[in-house]
Image (tube, rainbow, N blue to C red; front, side):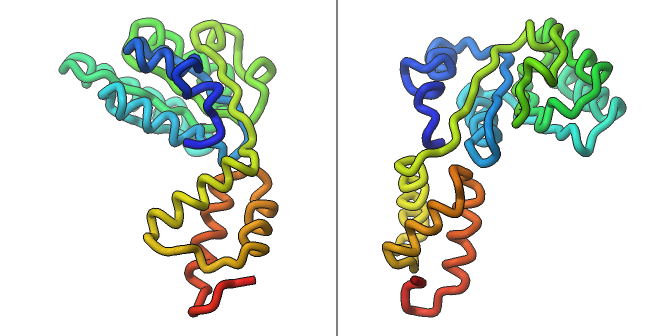
Length: 196
C-alpha cells in the first residue's frame, strides 16, 4: 500500500493498532484505487484472521446471515474473522443494523469500505462501533512507487518512454488500480520499442 502513511505508518492509527495487536472494527473512506481492499486483506493476514468479503451491491440479508453464521462457527473453533464489507454505504439501514450484534460480541472485526462520507451514509449505531479513517487520493510520488513496484515485479523496465510514464500517472488521477490496469495494457501492447 502506498500513499497512506498517515494511517499505516508506525505513528498512524492503524499502524499502532497492528503493533499493539488490538485491531478494531473500522470504516475506510476514500476514492477508488487508494488501497481500501488491500489494507483489509493485509490486516487479516497480519493479525491471523480469516478474511471474508461481501459486497453491498451483490448481497442481501440472507447473504449477511450466512456470512455471520460462518463467522460464528469459525469463532467457536478458535478462528476469528475479518469481514470486509465493500461499498458498505449501499447497505440499507436494516442491513447495517444486522452488523451490530456480531461486531459487539466479537464474532467479526468489520472493515467497511466506502467512497461516500460515512457520516451521511452509515447509521449512527454502526458508526459508533467503528473507527473511521480517511484514505488520500494517491499523489505523484505514490504513483511513481507503484510503477517502480510493477517494474520490480516484471523484472524489466516498463515499455514506456518518460513522457508516456508521466501521461499514465496523469491519466490515472490518483487511482492506483487504474494505473496498474494501464500498465498491464501497455505491457501487452508493447512489441519491443517503448510506447511514447
